[in-house]
Length: 269
Length: 314
Image 1 (tube, rainbow over the protein chains, first blue to last red):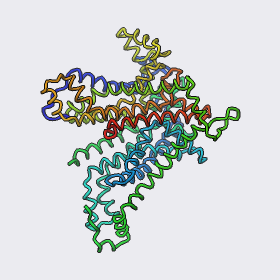
Image 2 (image 1 turned 90 degrees about the vertical axis):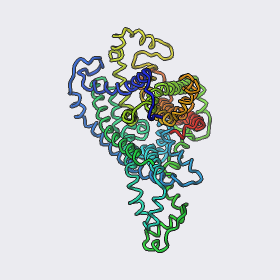
Image 3 (image 1 turned 90 degrees about the horizontal axis):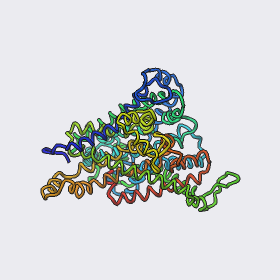
């Protein structure tokens, strides 16, 4: 809607936007602030003093590192499976017109359109019926289910912008399907795949609702954070772990945004 | 568009033969592409959803504590108990209130991004809005525990402004109140709005981007008051975006069971009920009843949203 000669925003709109922006980011500053407070069981403002000792307390906790490792493993495996499944589905749905195409697009979105708790309990009851032991792989199954749509959406968006003729041109010039995939499709889709993969990774890394139902005794990082939330003492430790969780996903997400935005600008025709 | 593969090159290798085969038999190729994803989502996932519906028509035997796999509507009938249907109403009410508040807050910033922001500012704001979307909601909720604490920054600010009476009045109020600032319905509401706001900003901004400036100018030229232009032109065109955003704000509130444990009062929410019945109480059929309710509510919501054109705005 913006364009040359667009009028300047009124003061009211600017203030309202600024307020909403502050609302989004002020709480994150608060997390940082209370990671350094000297109080162990209260959140007095302003904090009476500052210390870095909660960092050493948190980092000395082997359970936390265990949770970080599990979350990273789950996210990595889920992302790979989601890329394969989401990629194939995107390849099937884009351009092809077939009976049930809308239904396919619908069930891909369903896991994020329905509340996470529905997905969680549904998968859990199936897993119990199948007598599967809850652990790494059951967590992965849950995460793949809602990660597919992330990869799928990113790819479909990119495929729509790609000229359909390039694949046919490649075949006309004698390339095999593998060659076309390797030299034509992959370079065109690479950034969309990477961005989709990163976002799927971040989503998996931070997920707690579905995970609560599909995890056994092991704790992913969000579940670990939730478990230490109600400890009466050493409350700032939760803030430290929270900062760590933010840090792990922040830079990859930035990268994903840059990847998709750049190509959106240069490739549009 | 239909170009056949040259005969000569197709026979050179098995790879070529395979690609030629798939080119000539697009249905086989389509099925192979669809198969893994459909097995996962269509069989495993939809099957699981179906099994939950089946569970909701089973019951828990009172004395043995075992699940009786005989068809009955008695578990569903428990919903008629006021204590139970009030949970559904409370949760749906909260989800609706949160969605409306998100829409109101999202509009100004989305409008600013779509209409006034320079490309650089827009990129900055876009990333600023999208970052929280992908970072842990639990972590972001945590911040509010310290903000809302009795001696925390919110009360500190209100006391400096002489407004601490307002906070106490809210806590004392019948529907929104609660025992403390951290544990009140009002706080739960604020934290939900905070968490889901980005989900609303993005689709609304995308919808507003597509509103041609000429429409606004035409409306202005024809003598419409800016407020009329907003009501008659901007709002209807932004509707698909608002509805698309509300799918997320509504669905996420509907199924959450984490936040009520941190910020809520002793009143239960639907997600909590599913969680407790499934876990501690071991009553999977009853948990399945509440899950089915959530599914039905969402399916109704999605079909309304579809009619409002929200799926194109997702």
